[in-house]
Image (cartoon, rainbow, N blue to C red; front, side):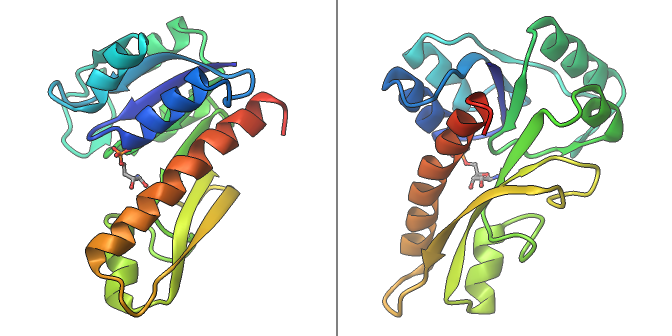
Length: 191
Ligand code: GRF
């Protein structure tokens, strides 16, 4: 199963996926490309570390969504890679129906909350400010509804009385780094 990872930032989840691949824990999935919509995104460096091609693709003309010329470029590139699975790992841009339909049922997203609670930006901060005692992360299929597609799996994170936003965030990232590679591995095995 050929996997393409799309991201915008740190890429700690991309790194976790690549580490799982190196450890033989990614099933029959193989990451063939990392794509960033920001030329200086740290996620690109993980490709070099793990020997996986990584490149910036210009998402212009829009700032927060992928539509128009940029969308064409992404569709053509992903298609040319023969991708079976597109993983949005911190891709901070709304994907529009044309790309979603082009790769129907093949795009998954990682979201830092137990959806359907706290969709949208800053799922960790939203949960923290609301004072919930249990949160977690979700991997779901991408549909036209932002953070609204069918849920594939979730991992729970408990917020303890002595947690701070920082320790809660750290626990969330640990959970994400376990959940996302395990979902990819299961999907690659037909799960
Ligand atoms: C993660 O918290 C993910 O849930 C959200 O964006 C963040 C990406 O982190 N969608 P990283 O770039 O993988 O470190």
